[in-house]
Length: 130
Image (cartoon, rainbow, N blue to C red):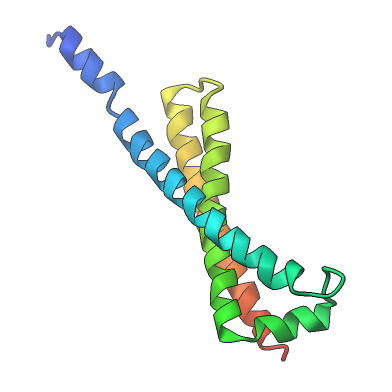
């Protein structure tokens, strides 16, 4: 019968922590990018418009500009993982079991991908309304 040493137990306990550190860096980078993209979004959609709001048709016309379209899609691609990783962090702070942690991580990853795919599809579909 094999015995597990204290070192092996410690290594096993910290095995999942390395990937959590990598995801924290992703969240920090997306947070920095959000500062830039949110600033551009606010200026482009709210501060340069008289009254601060656009009608639906004005938004569609404005987003038909390829530069604005790319900025808005980048905003979606950056904000989604940032928000989902934040939600995952809150859930992980509740102390779920190791099996539940793996399930949560997979659910968050799948949801992130689905949200981005749907958002990009929707942005392209709105472009086709023009």
